[in-house]
Image (tube, one colour):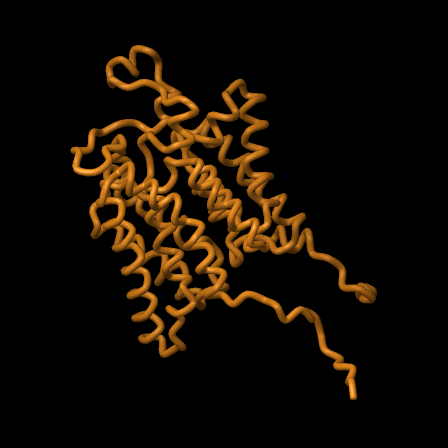
Length: 319
């Protein structure tokens, strides 16, 4: 005999477990990691390994000390470690990378209750803390050297595009073209140099329905439009720097970004606007991390603004 089961929503039981979601994110990050290892050598793999191992160890120890159920099996610490490594220069001393992992896992994530409870993206916050604490080490960029070749210092594309011809000649560098930006043959953070690898990973997550494209499209679109209005090359602005890394892998974080589609669009627009303002008028050539962190803080307010009305519910009458 069939029974009618009455229960609250959601009614779809074909949900993905956290570990499966994180595994898909790890898979999506592999093209960018492989590109980073190809262009910067084994040092890129060592940096990523230290970040991942540090994040997992810190999460294990923190949960143990706090006498809470261990959560390293959900792979979220691994994802944090990989994304943190993607946001670091390949020359960064490994002990500084370990400090960044501590900030991301212990301070930003676990002290706020663990996965889903943190108000800001752990990897982004750790990157900004490291930028403020170790500015020289965090801006020591090198040109791609591949395997077995000594690294040569160089400026990032966003820094180069702002230089005069005399400054470029003095530095002995040229502004990279679209091909270099797309394929990753430029100086920059480990994971942000190859735009094509990040695009492949982002589209993979969208195809697997792990992320919605609402935030990435509004992020990239608003930055491109404002750059065009300002007289900058919009394609160059979205290919250079960490736009694709931020848009596909950090502006889509479940815990720190809005849930509704409307909220995601507003979040993405805010990221694009803030990134443009920092790039065009600020002292930093890059603004992706700061924009996402600021919008993380505004996420509760965006959620409140875009909250959908419960079907059949009525607002309380004020007396």
